[in-house]
Length: 284
Image (cartoon, rainbow, N blue to C red; front, side):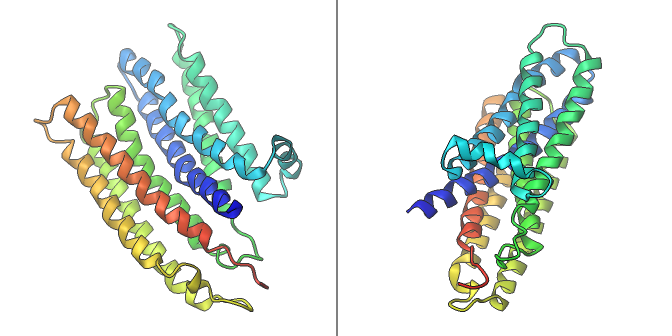
C-alpha cells in the first residue's frame, strides 16, 4: 500500500513538474518578446499558472520522503547524489519563478529587471529538467537505468507543456497566431517521439531479468498504455488545433484548451504510473 502511494506521488511529480517548467519557459519567451506593455503585464500575472503546476508536482513528490526532517537531509548529497541535485534545482526554480511572479505585481516593473530575472529562472528550469531526467540512472535498477527513462520524461514533459502553455497564454489573452500552430506542431512531434521511445523501451524490457522475474512481466499492459497515450495525446492536440479556428469564440477556445490540458495530463500520468511499476533491482 505504501509503495503504491509512493508511486502515485512520484508519478504526479513527473507528470506535472516537467510540464510546468516547459510551460513556464514558453510563457517566459512570450514575455521576453512581447512588444505591447499591457500584454507583458498580463503574461506576468498568468505566469503563476505554470509555476503552480510545477509547485503541486514538487509537493506531491515530497510526500514519499516520509517526514520534513528527511527532506532536509536530501541537501547533504548535493553534487554527489542525483536526487539531491534534483531537489536543489527544483527549489531554485520554484524560488526564482515564484519570486518573479510576486515582484511582477508592481505597477512599474522595469524590463531591465524582469528580462534577466526570467532568463535566470528559465535556466533554472532547464537545470531541473536535466537533473530530474538523470535521477533514475540507478545501476541497481536496470529497468530504469536506460536511455529511454530520461527520453520519455523529457518528451512527455515537452508534449504536455506545449498543451498547457496554450491554455495559459490564452488565459493571459495573448493572440497566438502563427506561434500557436508552432506549439501544436511541437506538441505533435514530441508526442510521436515519445511513442517511439516507449515502444523501444517496451521491446528492450524483454532482455532484462533478475533471479526471480523478467522486466516485461512487471507491466504486461504497457503496450496498451502506450496506445492510450498516443490516442489521448492526439485527441488533446486535435482540440488545441480546433481551438485555432478563426470563427471560434473566446469561450469555446478556452473550453477546448482546458479539455486538451486535462487529456494531455491524463495521457502522461498513465505512462508515469507504468514507469514506476517497472521498478526491479538486479538481485531480487
